[in-house]
Length: 69
Image (tube, rainbow, N blue to C red; front, side, top):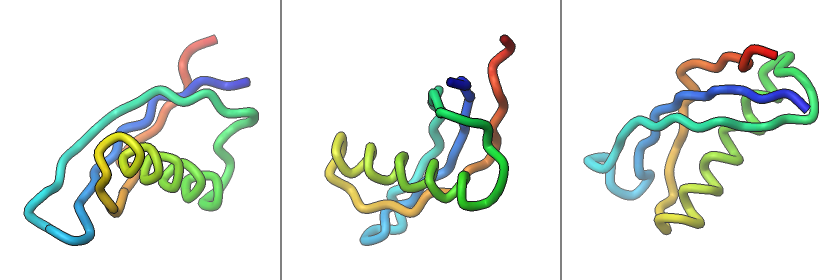
C-alpha cells in the first residue's frame, strides 16, 4: 500500500457559486501511474463529497505526492 497527499478543487454541478478546495490523504494499492488512476481518485472524492454533503460536484486534482516511506 502507498499513501498519497492529494489536493483538489470542486464545484457544485447544480450551483456553480458553490465551490472550494480540499485536501486528503489516500492509501492506494499501487502507485499513481497514469490518467485512469487520477480519474479513480476524482471519482472517489466525488463520491465522498456526495455521501458527506449530499452535493453532486465536479472535481479537479491539483496536486498529489506520495508520503515519504
